Image 1 (cartoon, rainbow, N blue to C red):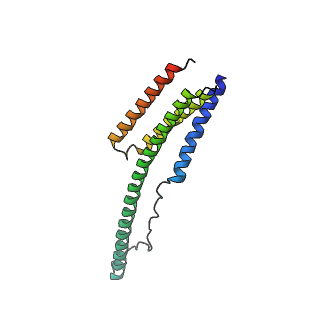
Image 2: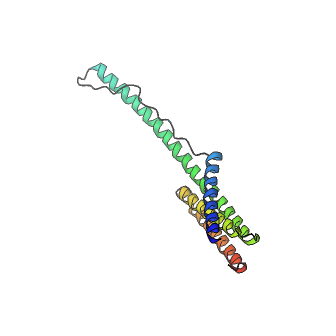
Image 3: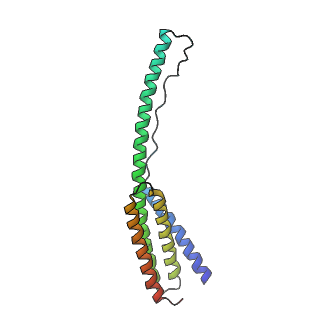
Length: 171
């Protein structure tokens, strides 16, 4: 029975983590990489310094400056939207991680079927994985105070439910 419980717990952890990742991608997709403009004319090579060649060089330089400014604007906008998205992933994953923690602990505590501990443990492991992914994605995009507060809440939930379950279970 122990092998079955371990297998069930691992499979639930994998399935629930995959569902969270797929759900996040389906309902909150990430920013799309911008299509950067390219040059429309080739850079002239001016071996002779004629007025015509220097004029083409100036046209190319002007187009180059305009395109580079547009590329910089697109890149800056993309980086800002990526930062917002990563912060959202932090929040989403931590909310679901907490819910998985609480759900897993409640299943372990309230249900009396033989596989309840495996199901609850799988949910707790999946919640832990969701939180790790949330922290990894949002580390540079999230305020340190928010990261600390979420970590403190998670620690309190983990310790509190662990003590309650440990007091009531005999195995």
